[in-house]
Length: 113
Length: 114
Image (cartoon, rainbow over all chains, first blue to last red; front, side, top):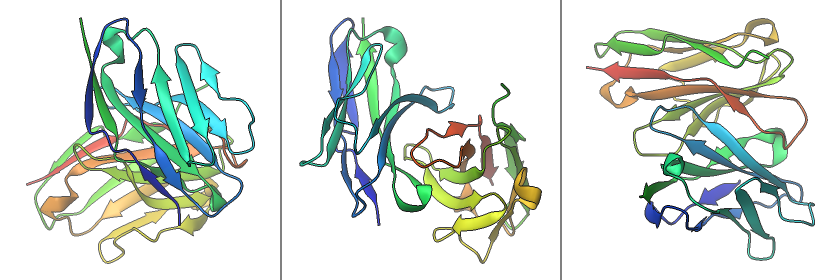
């Protein structure tokens, strides 16, 4: 079975500062994928970034980067230069055997001006 | 490229009534997911299809929930009879067959059971 844990229910961050969202995972599969999604108050689920278990480099997409520490089974999301529009729920997710996509409980981020 | 389409967007029903949701995935996407997202929580997988076959339905309350994906394209999710605790957003998502590709989500159906 696969499991995703996000221990931070909510966070405040000052505009233009960086914020790190924690995510730990558990799976017995050697091949898996890790994802981060953003869900604004409007409700849509927006894909942000992907990290494969065999990828040697940390994934980056614009202001988003994924700090992948395989031995610790963590996949933290770093958002640099926070903007007011970054205020949303953020979900960590993973796929493993059978391509089942499992989500964590989410972290709410509120960017302060 | 058209996204994942879901309907209706909103539905209010009384408990013990039945309701159905519809999803049209992105063309060519073999994998289709239905999730239940209760307010303030992460999405919970209800059922996963690969083409028209069920891959995982371990968390689907089969006494009241059912889902089908005819011809491996569109899918419907039905609740009969509904309970108050079924109030949630029901999200449909699709992805390519290849493992570890991102899933694309529809806008969801917000169900309120009164």
